[in-house]
Image 1: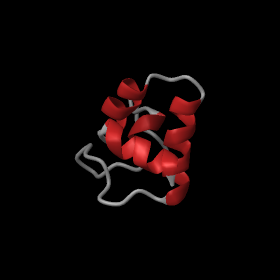
Image 2 (image 1 turned 30 degrees about the vertical axis):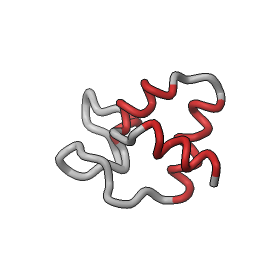
Image 3 (image 1 turned 60 degrees about the vertical axis):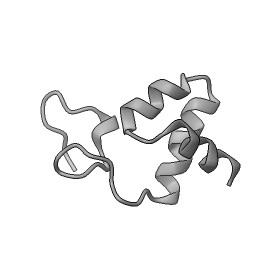
Image 4 (image 1 turned 90 degrees about the vertical axis):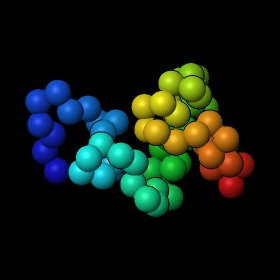
Length: 62
């Protein structure tokens, strides 16, 4: 899906109103976990994708 001007890769997969999807795919969950495992700040990733840090930690343990 082509991005509009000003739309980042981070906004892909979100609902049409910018809210996070109701359910994340396993692949997308893995991508998000890999970001903070590589050193990105957990809080920053959490805020960007609107998923709580405990939920991201839960995905990491799975």
